[in-house]
Structure formats: C-alpha cells, structure tokens
Length: 124
Image 1 (cartoon, one colour):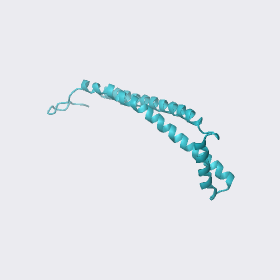
Image 2: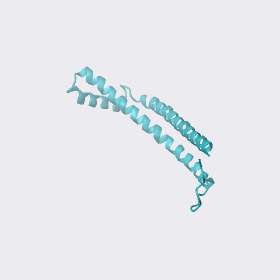
Image 3: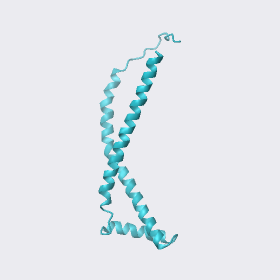
Image 4: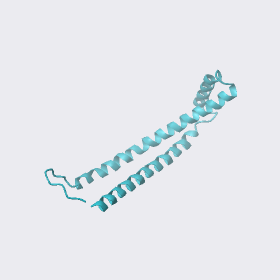
C-alpha cells in the first residue's frame, strides 16, 4: 500500500510538472508572437506611438534630462508592449484550458466512491 501511494504521488507530481511546463511554454511562445505583431506598430510613422512617446517624454523631462527622459519613455512603452502581449497570450489560451477542463470532467465519474462506516484498513 505504501509503494502504491508513493507511485501515485510521483505520477501526480510528474503530471502536474509537465502540465505546468507545457502551458508556460505555450503562453511564452504566444506572447512572443503577439509581441512581434504589435511591435510593427511602434514606429516613428505611427501617430499614436509618437503621441504616446511625446506624452511620456514630456512627463519624465522634469525629473531627468531630455535624453534620459526619452530613454525612459521608450522603456515605458516597451513595458506596456510586453504587458499587452502577455495579456493577449493568456486571453488566447483561456479557451484551450476551458476545453481541457471540460474534457477531463467526465473522468470524475471513474473515481471510486468512498463509503463511510467501514473499519479502517490495518497498515503497518
């Protein structure tokens, strides 16, 4: 009984680890895809980008010089890009996780029902 419990826990831990690793890999790759798609809009020819860059640079100029404010504004816009690409990656994989949960839901019916009132099994 002890060996079976050990193997069960080993399989549960391995399954959880592989599942987490797979989902993390999928989300990281999708975030990279979204980042590559969105970075195409961050050009000096895009009016929305230049407006956001100018606003951030203007807000940061008072605390630091104009050159440092420009670098910090670029960093802020890049961080915003990373956050948005991660959000789209999570949003895109949510239906996949939902379907996976729905597929696994009927497996609950295979579990053995525990009946109360039975004597405990003698173990070492």
